[in-house]
Length: 198
Image (cartoon, rainbow, N blue to C red; front, side, top):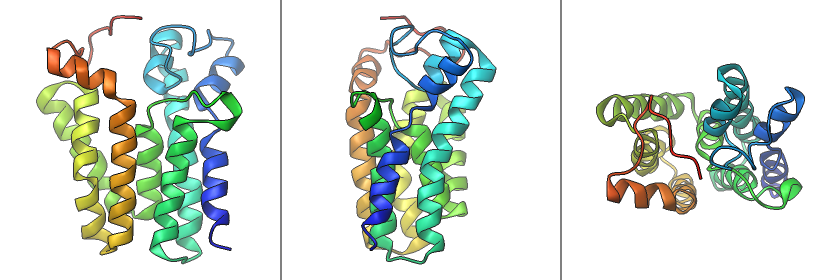
């Protein structure tokens, strides 16, 4: 029955907080405005701080709830890790929204907190430190994802969990391929500066 948790994780992950929040608050569809990405950053651009904050919490919650439930049920670490992967996959490729989703960082943060509060705090601390150092949100997120397997090994001592975190990191790196290209060209906008629209 352990396979039920990844299935639930994928379905919950497929619920787009950005699209729902924008619809309820009568804001432009984030898929057709700004960067076209249904995530908190683009919601901030098209709808302001309140809508973005709600979106961020919603995206994090859909990673946290299924993974925390799996952790609380004390199922094997492999299945907890697979549930986290499924949540992120749901966000990236949502079955309810034509498989066109966001970039997965907030959902990953929620999933990491669902695995271990200490892992989640290490993730946040790393992101904040890199953000302050480089002032580039995507670089901070990608750098922290590189460290995620280390954080999970420290807190869980589970090789299965580490492997699952590597899968998540690879998925999100792939989803950030355009950001990576801009980083390599020195064109990725810094925090506080408006990102060029598509």
